[in-house]
Length: 200
Image (cartoon, rainbow, N blue to C red):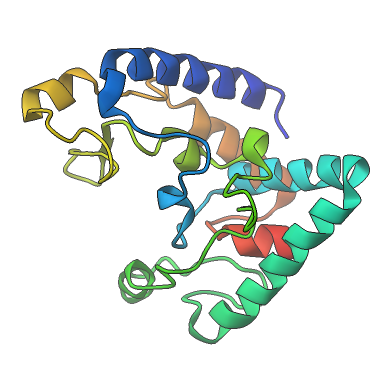
């Protein structure tokens, strides 16, 4: 794990705090809300290494919780593998157009293995992927740079008011540089999903 990942996370947390302040009551994200914890999404290798580090730490502190997460991840993979649009052994998603199209319809109702069924909280919160850290506030997404927000947030806000709350999480693109370092160090390239990281 690159040491600068901690710096990146601090930058993201600071930007999110400012966006949360600007958004006020429009941003309804709170502990126990699981809207963004349902449905599979792609994560990069930097996210994967961070999650694995979180699991190692949790195993040393609360081994029974880590074991429960690992079991949920394994059970999730058993459900997902038959239609997984990628390498079923490595967990790397295919990058061809057909596979990417299949992924958009893939496992949209699957809960994240790190989500506690009892409390509705993320059990690896400090080590969560970047997508989890920036979900909710207005963030530019896709090639056209559309401004996306969580469907539970910004009710009653005008497009101009939403745009005024825009979050620019990583303006210097530190994440892609750190991810490239991780890929070079580990020799693993491409995106995967959380269940593959946590089932190992």
